[in-house]
Length: 182
Image (cartoon, rainbow, N blue to C red; front, side, top):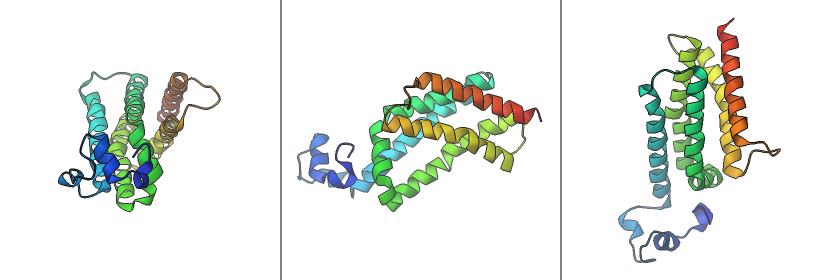
């Protein structure tokens, strides 16, 4: 699917790519259709990144800069390891309503909750309120752009990705500290 797209990847080609005899029915012993392959891949992707981010709960508390750097590195590295899946989902997901719904549910659910909780803690809030959600959106929408650029190529203007991420972390912490200081 990464090479030919969702619609362009035939069941026979998928069977052949995973070592099954093409058009011998092996695919249908495991899946009802191609959409189920995407669901399985998305579920594995989601569980893996959430497990990685969950590790942060067991780490000794660091500075906000250290924590955001750690989270960012994990998210960016995880996305890079799964670039082909992310490209299929970006390219073909919008034309597959059930796939698109799963993507939205993850991005606006479990993944979002991790970032909201981190932001709530940084702002010293006892509960998640509108301000926490707004700050989370402002901070992490830039990370979403970085992931998008990584999926489709390189950071523009010949900028170094590590420098961009470090600058983004530093400015995000400055932004939060400015809000808390008010």
